[in-house]
Amino acid sequence: MKIHDSKYDCGKKPKRKKQGNDKDKFRSTQAWQKKREEIKQRDNYLCQVCIRKLYDTHNQYTYSDLQVHHAVPLEEDFDKRLDNDILLTICERHHEMAENGEIPIQVVLDIVREQEERQKFS
Image 1 (cartoon, rainbow, N blue to C red):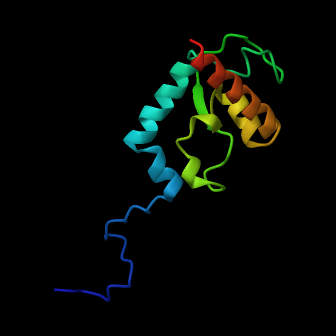
Image 2 (image 1 turned 180 degrees about the vertical axis):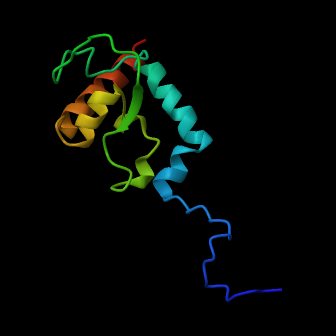
C-alpha cells in the first residue's frame, strides 16, 4: 500500500548507488588488476620517475604509494587501456604531476619505451 506518490522523497527510501563510469568500472576489473601488477613487476616495483631523479625527486628509490599511470588517458583512447606501451609505474606524487601535465606525455612514453626494451633483454 502506497502512502504517497513514488516521486516524493520522504527520506526513508533507500538511496540507489550511482552507476560508475567506464573508467571506474574498468579499474575494478580483474584484467586491470592483473595488468597493473604485471607493469609494477616489469618496473621492479619502483617509481620510474624517481629512479631517474627527474622532476624534483626526493627519494630515488620510491617503492611506496605506487600507481600505474596511463600515458594516454582512458577518455582519449579506451581501447589502449591494457597496452604495455602506455603504462608506467610511478609514485603518487609523480602520478599527480603527470596527470596535470607537469611531466610531459613524451617523457612518460620515452620511459615506458626504455622499460619495454629492458624487459625484452632480461
